[in-house]
Amino acid sequence: MSAGGPTIAEQLQWMTDELDAAGVFFGHGTDNAWDEAVALLLSVLAIEPANAGQELLAETLDSQQCEQLNDLLKRRIEERLPAAYLTGEAWFCGLSFKVNEHVLVPRSPIAELIESGFAPWLSSERAINRVLDMGTGSGCIAIACAYAFPAAQVDAVDVSFEALAVTRDNIAAHELAGRVDALVSDIWSNLQGRHYDLIVSNPPYVSAAEMAVLPAEYYREPILGLQAADDGLALVHRILAGAAEHLAEDGILVVEVGNSEAALVAAYPEVPFTWLSFEHGGSGVFLLDEQALKRWFPAPY
Ligand SMILES: C[S@@+](CC[C@H](N)C(=O)[O-])C[C@H]1O[C@@H](n2cnc3c(N)ncnc32)[C@H](O)[C@@H]1O
Figure (cartoon, rainbow, N blue to C red):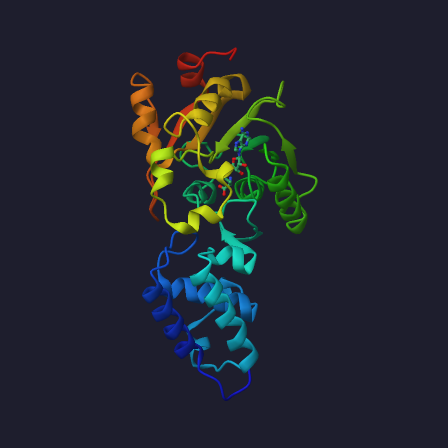
């Protein structure tokens, strides 16, 4: 970096102040203005987050870098675009994913479960040969599962052709073409005869009432990835209805339902959902095993 411009610390502080003053919403990969500014900066400098250290702060930016950053900041504020759509990249489980406005910005707390190999819910002794990511979007959960379970074949399923184009780009970028398949399916419609040791889903689950009060940044994401009818549960009902049919013996189903947790519990008061807890924040993710699904949501659906 050439001398003469502001230091990175100065630039980041200025961007942080601008973001705070503009009242933008954080929640698409970062939760505060400083981290959001850092995400934009690292993208312009083409530095991976894992390689960014404190020593960077004293370096100076050249005029071209400042101009690029100022443009990104202006768009972040004026268009309320989440930073990931501006940079075209998001991070999940420490992995880089291409994103655009056809896919949700990856941020599911399910990342923490993947990083722990779904322990203790899946024993390390159990062979994980088949994994399904229902509603894959960018493919982040499917691809991170392929890294976590090196022997597994993973189906990355979505109803959106535009989203699946992004999934396929990410599968190729991670060189997982032989192990992760991007498939179009309206929930279970194209998955007849397929059985999985692990089914993971972060489906659309935002109710119309919740959608109406979400900050502008969420309206930059595909509505198909966010909103669902029936108090946010329309897709979750369908996932539950078919999961027993598609789980292998002793397999597990893990589904994120976010703030629709209360509506789900009210809809199935007798079902013993296991609600998972997260060290790094997040809630509204349940687990049911094959036995419980067979009992409470018996096939055929
Ligand atoms: C909340 S996004 C999750 C994306 C990604 N798994 C993640 O965690 O970032 C939900 C995804 O479900 C997909 N979807 C919506 N309706 C669907 C359906 N009927 N069948 C399959 N996928 C669907 C959307 O296109 C979207 O990509």
